[in-house]
Length: 229
Figure 1 (cartoon, helix red, strand yellow):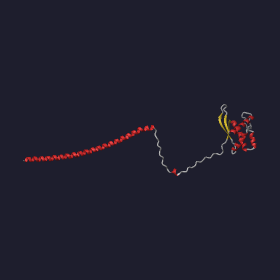
Figure 2: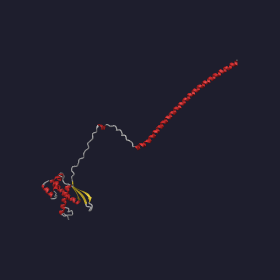
Figure 3: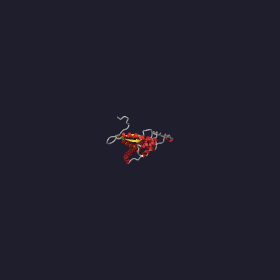
Figure 4: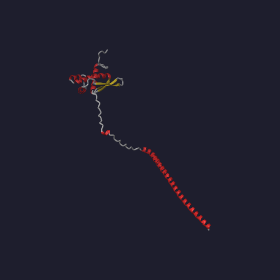
C-alpha cells in the first residue's frame, strides 16, 4: 500500500531517477522544450517549477540549491539571468504539457514539455479609425467611361456575316421603299398625262365638229342658190 508516497518511481532506482530528472530539467532550461512520456513529463514539471521559483529569489543560497539538481554552470546562469526575470510577474504555472500521441513501438503516450513564454496580459483589440466623410465622397460623381474591349478574332469573324446580312436587309428594304415611291409617282404622272391628252383630243374634236358643221351650212347655201338659178 502506498500511503503518503508522493513520488513516482518511474521503473528505476532512486539514484537513477534523480539523475534522470536532473538531466531532463537541464535540457528543458537549456532548449526551452523537450519530448518525453507523460509520466516523466509530470515529474519533470514538478522539478522545473521548483528551479524557476529558486531563480526568482536570486540569492546565493538559491543558486547552491539549483546546483544540487542542475550540474551545468551555464544553464544555472541562464536560469537566474533569463528565466527568473521573465517569470517574475507569474505566480506558478511556468511549464505546460502537450500530448502528441502514442509512440511507435510500445504505444507509450508521448508529450511535449515546454516553458510558458506567453505574456499574461491579453492584447487589446485595436479600434479601426473612423473615416471622415469628405465633400467629394458626398457629391455624386459621374461614372467613368467604360473601357473599350477589343473583341477576339473569333468573335469578329462570328459577328461579320450577321452584320453583313443585317446591312443587306436594310438596303433591300430601302430599295423597296424607293421603288414604291417611284411607282406611285409614275402612276400619278401617267394619270395626269392621260387627262391632259383627253382634254386636248376633246378640244380638237370640238373644233373639227364646228368646222364640219360650218362646211355643211356653206354647202347647203350653195345648193339652194343653184336650185334658184
